[in-house]
Length: 344
Image 1 (cartoon, helix red, strand yellow):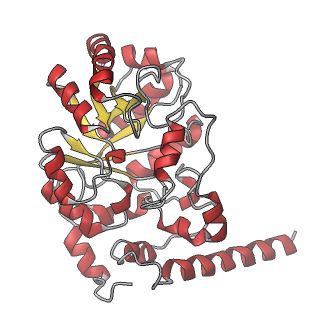
Image 2 (cartoon, rainbow, N blue to C red):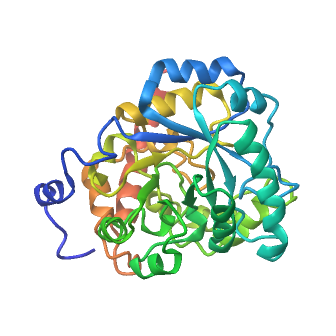
C-alpha cells in the first residue's frame, strides 16, 4: 500500500470541484440499448429528463463487430426513428477483420443511412485510423475513443490527437485516480467513464475475451474464472465504481457511461441500476450488472476501503489490503447466513 496515501479530507479537497461539468447527479449519461419497445425508452425519458445524453447500439456484425455478442434488435428501428434520445453506434471490435482501408468504405456506407435516416449523433470507435475515415465522411459526428483503445497514459493522447471528441479511458486506470486526473488534464476533449464494467485492470485474458465476444463464437464464459476461483478477492479490484462512491471521481470526467447490453437485459434491473447511478443511491457491488468478473456475493464496500484502492500502488504482491478485506467480509457474510439458518 502506498505509504503516502492522502487522508480522506485531502482526497475530498483534491477531487471536489463545484460547478465542473459532469459532476454530481446532473451528469449526462450514455446508456446501452436493450431490445425493449418504445414505451420503455419513453418512460426513461419521463423519469430522467436531461440526465441521459444518448443510447448506444452496435452496428450490424455483418459489417463490423461491436466488441460484444450479438443482441436482439427487434425494436431498434422504433427507437432510432421515434425515440426520445439521440443514439450513437458502436464501431469497436478489439481488432478489425480486415485492414482499415478494406473495412472503412462499408462502415461509411452504413453510417450514411444511420446519420441520414435516423437520429444517430455519435460513434464509439476503437481503431484511430478508422475514426479518421469516419471523421472525413462525417465532420459533425461526435466520435468517442473506445475503452478498447486502451488509453491510460498522457503520452497516448499525442497518438490520437485531433481524432476523437471524447475519450473513454481503459479500465486499467479506473482504480487509479491520479492517472485519471492526468488524462483529464491532457485530453483536450471530454472524458467519459464507464462505471460498472467489472473486468480486472490489466487482465491478461481481456484481449482474447473481447475477441471471442465480438466474433461468431458462442457466448464466451469468463476466461479468468479459474483465476477468480482461486483468488476471489481479485473481484474487489475490478474497474467498477458504485453509485455512492462516484463523488470521489468528481473533476475527472465530463459524462458517464453505463455498460450492460448483456447483464442489464432485464428492463426492471436496467431501470433500478440506472436510477441508482443517476441519483447516487447505494448499491452493492453484485447489483450493478458488471459481468462475470463482478463481485458475486453481497459484500458491503465501504467508502474507506474503496478510497484506498484509488491511491494504492497496484502491487498486490506486497499488499494484502483487498485480500484481507474480502476475507473478513466473507467471514461476516457466512456468519450472518449461519445465524439466519439456525433461527428458521
